[in-house]
Length: 114
Length: 111
Image (cartoon, each protein chain N blue to C red):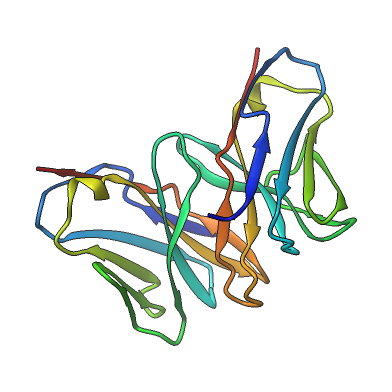
């Protein structure tokens, strides 16, 4: 199994509070991703990173920011959480192959915003 | 608009039969397509990748076809088992190392 750890695994918070989700990998892979998964929408890309301090927006980036100060850590921040951000968040890393594109996913972080 | 469509209704089959799941897409020209398996409460797990110049790919009991003219991929599980019950997701690359996922199809294999 790819070494990907997400924390926290479950979080309940209130509208307007900041939230940070952490993704930690032990594989030394360059590419890291944050997806959210909601019923009827499937997995949607929020942000991704292609190296330390190199990040870019995905399909649903509004209301989210990311940071990657080390190869192994990719943080997702909700500056002011809203109920629409209640979701399951998955971190993923791309395989070492240059063009395979296969992703290895973490176990997910379930966020509930009340 | 760009779309990836997978049958949202669950597919129910009997053990030993072949399960066939469909992934259709519009307005994409992917260089490759992937299939993942997802169990409840878990992250997706990569199964197979097929490139645009490949018609068919096999791995054990799994077979994937890719028809870029029809813009369709079929995912087959032969001799299905109850342990194959899960949600199966297809994904297309939309750029270098970026994937877009379908909503998935739930497969239920009964003994």
